Length: 208
Picture 1: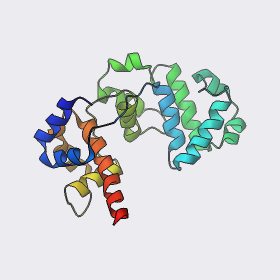
Picture 2: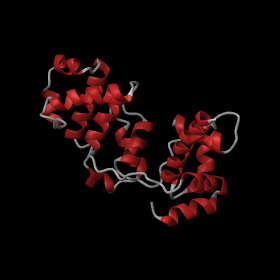
Picture 3: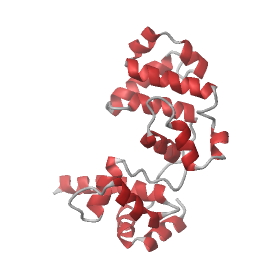
């Protein structure tokens, strides 16, 4: 992460700056996957443990020799085959909708989405079954590398804010959005530090 981003955040918000000093440089990695594949992965991960999701994804990709199926290939896979991978009926429907909307262009490729605003992309993606604003924001942050995303509904971001700013309870999404305006245009980086600050506090608590 460019040093000027960290300097800008620290100058705009000394409290966040203290977390930056504690946690060190931002190591947020740039994503390179396709939006289509990222959405399929996100749906598989919904409401289950990461290890279980990884196992299901492994079986799902094994259907095509270890890669994600193309949208048409996914639409052609029988329901029983997907169920054998560990995918529930609701997740199957969501994933098939991702495939259908990849074919019709709603779930576009990186090059196409790169030309759209954050909100325009979110509007497109939330039309997909099983994809809400949070999932769309994660795709913006970790697949499309958008620098100014603040997922105000994310539990970890709100918990990090509560801990860092010494609050008794998590901030409401609207209040966090208003406060976070001072972090623009680097709200993705600010979010990363709030996530990591939760981990930091937990480690400190365990070490006592």
